[in-house]
Length: 404
Image (cartoon, rainbow, N blue to C red; front, side, top):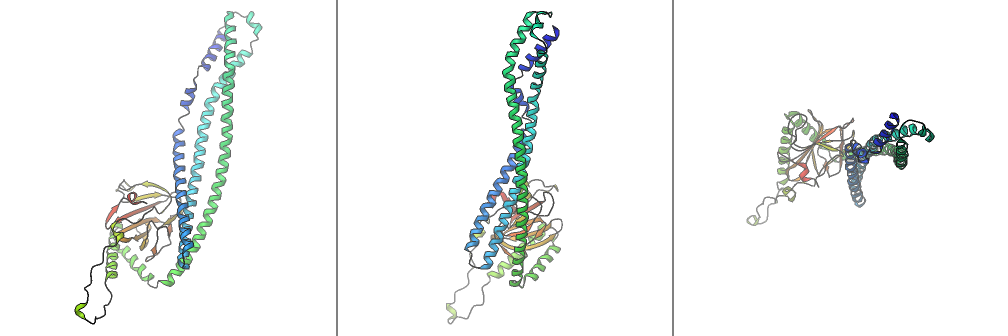
């Protein structure tokens, strides 16, 4: 009798487990799933933006009359395609991480749903061992047998419902496994496409460099002067200051009027007037981030060195494509102490960009680059960080405020 009552109590307790309890206990892995969804959304948005840029540049290339301009546009379009593939790769990795997080959450739910089913099955087995006829000869009130029949009739629909839920969770597990296989296959295809695109861009950049060397005989001397400034500079701030001074000198020389022929009537000659300030000097240039990735250090935040950041640190993938954030002239390209390979671009109106920690450079001192032109690549390895600074004169500027 005591054993029978314990079985009835166990059954009653199992039936009283509310569904909300299971729902509450399955919320633990939800934060990870939400994070992976956010990462997937960011990567998808970056891929869409890169796709739009590639289409715009390809349209410009189709309209270019000169072969040299068309080749430059084709290289820029290919760089945009590469950045789209890099964003697609990040999206694929985020998708696989999301599926893995969903699998963990689903396994957690499955384990929780299995527990009451196991308890119900064990209780049913104990009751099934007792033939109804034995209730007439065993000690104990007849009410126990009545209670068992009532509880059994109540349990059957609950067992059926929970079994259906269990089958649904198992089907969800199979679906997640298929999704994982498809995502892995898509990721491998994206990797292969990206490798081919990078090889094509490297060959195109080599042709552009050969053509540029033939056109610019003074490029070697200009590069030597820039590297000499890098050796003389105490730090990156000093280097930027020297480049700014050299740029001002160059602009002043360019603004000097050429030789003036002696007029027939010297008294009627007009006096030279100062050139008007260029319109571009009134505001920041059209600006964009040069690489696909995640901003890990913002303007004014504490950097790993403990100093306040004067720009952005962007974590990207190894060998990621780097493009010009805005149009301008390359004032420095080469290694600098503690910054790896760096590139300094002078923009109109006294604006200057510094891009540091590059692995390879494809732009040279004196090159006129347009926004989106390929200028280099990130170092190989896992999540290298590209440093980007924008300055107006000597003052660092918050890049986020000028992104367009």
